Image (cartoon, rainbow, N blue to C red; front, side, top):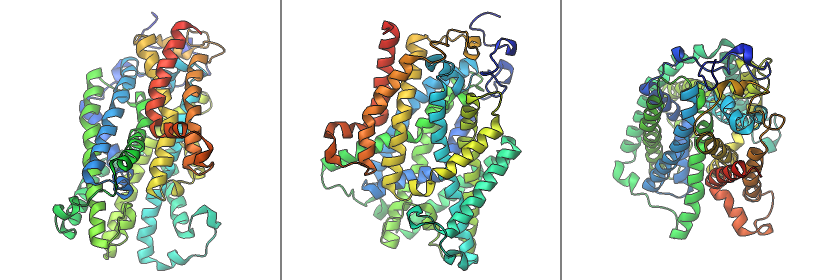
Length: 489
């Protein structure tokens, strides 16, 4: 077998680096075409967090076109690293954790893999909370006593007993699907692909009708009193929009490894990602703007909005649909990738199911109900915080693949402890240094955002870097990495 071959021999692998889940996909099994990738993005974009992403911008002060433009720009920006990172998956058939070995080292790849996995655990927790809360809203219509169950958790938890019960039950359902395997979710994905667009359009028509037409809805003004106030909100919001899919921009090789061709993954993503995110976000913007006219307050959470409907049957159907579609999204988007990432830690001991269970447990411990309790926490704490971690990882991987490797990888060596990607004891010190150099400056901004330290305690320009976390991280880490690798510092 020649070096650089697309095939891979298990006999030549180190046991600590190889498993069937991480092995290159053979050419005969790369069957995904352009429309498979378009359908993937349409399915993943049509979810409650996308709706909440748009409506949170309205709640934050933007008018409808400012919110839509911010979302479109953010998704167009993140499309670039999505396609660039997807190239390696399509060319070599390797998943994200294995691709990361080229730049971080065969052992150092665990650093970006674990960081990516932890973020996925957070998203798993958020989606599970949404699904569980949908079930709670339905059940309390039929069982009112569910709302008055004595409080079990401390007040600081911010968690009522009723929603906690349904959250845990929905969590168990997710874990059962992991036990059954990903194949069991296919029918739910089909259901979601047909039902959710219909439900979204129905909600849109309701908002237009109840809000006296699109005119009054879209005439809602921006709440910013000056252009300076707008720009101060816009840039961190844009970083949050990019951060929304910063996760998938890293582990997109987990999906593009099945591509028939580069054209399939490039065209499929370019067609579907910005368009589907923007269109579904528009529905969120219109409906949220309409709630101000209808109820006298902006309601950015669609579950809370649905709970205001008078028909028990209508709310029940809507909440069951939300729970099922959320279940489908959770398994497809938030279990597959972290399961691979955790498997990379110990391929011989951690398989897909075990990785899925680990994801589920961490998703519980991350307190997802607090992350989405308000739009400020959702965008400025959650989305921007993890973008400050994932941006530099993407910058390093892309810089390595295109400027250092010239898109050429030796696949066998990615699975060996004695190959060229072993570096120093399995870690590429330059990648780790480049990562730390851009994460550290964002820490003061994060701490001031969550209120851990006073804003006056740090220089203003340092705390402001946090608002551009993904952009600063992506470019600075990539440039720093290339300089160090070429100079051999």
